[in-house]
Length: 354
Image (cartoon, rainbow, N blue to C red; front, side, top):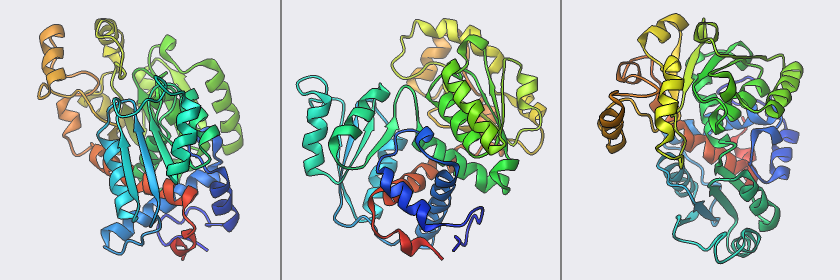
């Protein structure tokens, strides 16, 4: 049994069963390479269905809570549209819309919401929060972003890589540059080695991922045949890669006082035309968004006024170039989130197999 699109692996019933058995989607470390490949293939299939206006609603009658302790555009919209497309219903609980962690403990909130809803998405700070919700809710829980991990984004990135590189994951190479110890750096490193990619993590050495996670990733790479390089050399990192990836230099919630330090520290890792030329003509640019690439936002204007620069992690030239696949990447958030919810909650996965 294979998917018509992306025939990298057979869609084995035991993989479908194992993902449903996990129930939650909290971090990629919890998933095998085969399970991640299945989710990418499933994402491609539901994307194809939507494009062809042949969507099958597999979440009919499902009620889903969306907890957002951090603001969001792509994650919130991706979940809401995916749920609606699939016939479900969602309730948005924003930063001021619930008592979680303030007037009511996390585990109490989890047990209450678990009685009302069939699934819960959480986007906030600590990984321990989403893990606690998963422990006590009694329904599937999905990580929309924490300080440590961003697994739904990485699934979208993997789908985007597969679409644009048009080759197996084991032949795909990518470099992630900048502050590599953030949730994107952590998750790209894990996702990349899980899929057997050539993974290059590039930034100042003291901003590399923590040693414990690097050790785990190296162990995974031995099993999958992946390559893992951690370096502070841009030339070494980007040479010949299929994808150049970056993220904002100051993470959500960090004090503005850190900006001067970060700009000075990370300027050598700023993605520009010269860097893309070093990578080669095959290289595409990726970014999870939002990106500080011009002065058309309040933050962009503030950066220019205070620091005298018109962009941060990537230039306008690269961002708006034909090399950039950031909007394909953004769209794929919806399709991959749909696949995650179907895989962990729906009883109708068999209809996706051909």
